[in-house]
Length: 386
Ligand code: UD1
Ligand code: UDP
Image 1 (cartoon, rainbow, N blue to C red):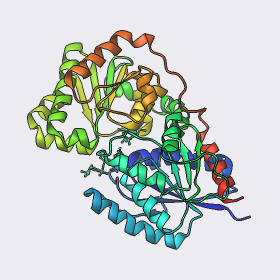
Image 2 (image 1 turned 120 degrees about the horizontal axis):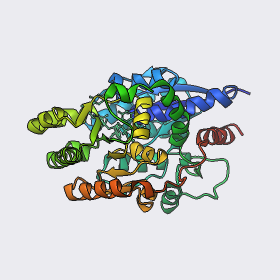
Image 3 (image 1 turned 45 degrees about the vertical axis):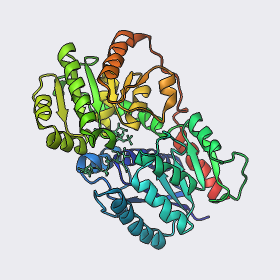
Image 4 (image 1 turned 90 degrees about the horizontal axis):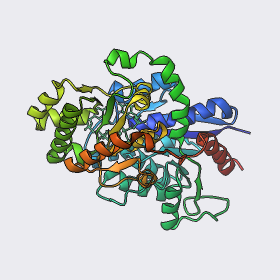
C-alpha cells in the first residue's frame, strides 16, 4: 500500500513548534505509513522566529518556502493563497494539515478546500468569541473548511458542537460530513518531551542571564491589540516597570520584533526607561528549549500569548494574561490564569494575589495524556487509508 502523503503547513513560530510534535511522532511510529511534505509560508522569517526551531527541534526542513514575509492581512493572506495553491496542485497531497489560527492557517485552509484537498485542522474549536481578533476569523473559517478536526480540550469540542459539527458522523468523511474528535493537545506532548531536554542542554542559561530560579517573572507580549494600541502598550510597560522596581523581581522579556518596534517608535521615553532598568531584561525572542526552561524556573508568567499561557499550566506557574478574554477558559476557572486586560490595577491585583498564594495553587491535567500526536496520526490513517 502506498504511504499517506500529508502536507504540513507552517508559517509562524507556534506552528513550527506544533509541527515538530507531528514530525516526531511520524519518525517514531509511522514512518512506514506516512510521508510528510513541509510547506513554510514565510510569514515568519527572522532566525529567532523560524530557523532556530528547525535547528533545535529537528523538524523536517521545509520542502517549499513561499517567502511571503510581512504585510497587511489581505496582502499577506492573498500571497500565501496564490502561492500555496500552486504547490498543492503540483504535489497532490492526500490531505493538508493546518495548525492553529494564523493567516497561514487561513490561506492554506481556503486554498486546499477549494481545490478539494481534505483539510486536517489541529487545534480546532478554539474560540475567544471576539471576532475583532484576527485569529478568531481565521479559526472559524479553518474549522468550517476542514474534513478532520482535532479539538485539544472539552471546551473546544463543545464549541464545535455548538456550531453544528456532529460527533455521530460516519465514514466516508468530507468537508460536508466532517469528523470531529477530542485528542488532547499536541503542545502538551511537546512540553513533556522537550522539558527534560531543556534541563540538559540549557542548564547554563539562568547563570548566563544572571537570574535565579523562582526570582524572576517571564513576560511575552505580541498581540496586535497590545502592540498597535499605544495606550495599552504604555499601561502594560509602565505597570510592569513599577512592579519590578517595587518588588526587585527581575522581569525577563523575550520580545517579539513587532513589540520592540512599537515600543521604540511610539513610546521612546518608556523604551529607554525599560531597556536601561536594572530589573528589566529586554531580550530578543529565545529558542523553544530556552523558553520552556524559563517557564519552568519563573515565579510568575505574564503574557498575551495563547501558547505561553498554556505552557504556564504545564509547568505549574500562575499566569497573568494581558487580554480581556481567552480561549483556554479552563485555566481561568481553575484560578491559575487571571485575565488582567491592559489595566494597571488588574495587573497589580493579579500580581499580588499570585505572589501571596503561589504555593496553594493546583494544576490539574486538562490537556490529555501527552500522546495526542500519535492519536492524531492514527486517526488520519484510519480516515484517509481505509
Ligand atoms: C502572528 C499571528 C498570531 C500569532 C503570532 C505568533 C496572524 C494574524 N497572527 O502574529 O496569531 O500569535 O504570529 O508569533 O497570523 N516581524 C518580524 N520578523 C518576522 C515576522 C514578523 O520582524 O520574522 C514583524 C513585522 O514587523 C510584522 C510584524 O512582526 O509586520 C507582525 O508579523 P505577523 O506575522 O503579521 O504577525 P504576528 O504578530 O507575528
Ligand atoms: N516561544 C519561544 N520563544 C519566545 C517566545 C515564545 O519559543 O521567545 C514559544 C512559546 O514557548 C510557545 C510559542 O512560542 O510554544 C507561542 O508562540 P506565540 O506566543 O508567538 O504565539 P501564540 O501561541 O500566541 O499564537
